[in-house]
Amino acid sequence: MEILPVTNQFNVGFNSEKAWSGPTWREAPAPVPTEAALAQRLERELRAAKGASELATAEVLVPAELLARASRQTLALAEGEPCGSRGAAVIIDVAGRRLAAFKIDPNTLTTHEIHLHLEHDPTNWTSLLPQFLKNLTRGGTIIISPQFTIEKKKLFRSQAE
Image (cartoon, rainbow, N blue to C red):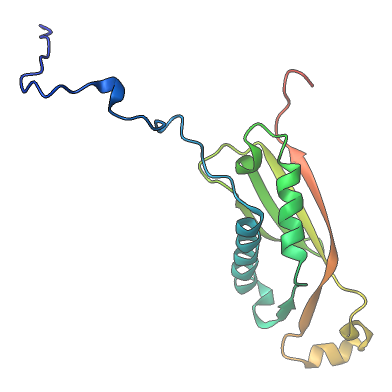
């Protein structure tokens, strides 16, 4: 096998060092989700999970600022991780039952899990109804409490720990 030198036969004066001054694909930073984008993703995942579960016939009411607060806390918990929020897998459960799970960035290695625990609101007016009246309704209304718990589970240990 013989290796032949490549010459610039067109003599255009192309300088490869000045061809592209932007970052290469390896240097380009991946987009980091904002609070609003993550809140929309949480809402989209909850809607999809609701439709695919036994909650499809029920009406689920979520407080207005709950998803924004949850996304803000999710991003805060992921701040110290090696891949940041892009390495998070978010798991949402309602009253102890897993409802949805998704990776924030499917192309990034999962370095930690964020568990978002939502509960039914015990102070709403439907909790005062007797059970037989609740069973008569079509699917009922589930009201999610504005309080939630969120926890991070690391999936690795660094050498410093």
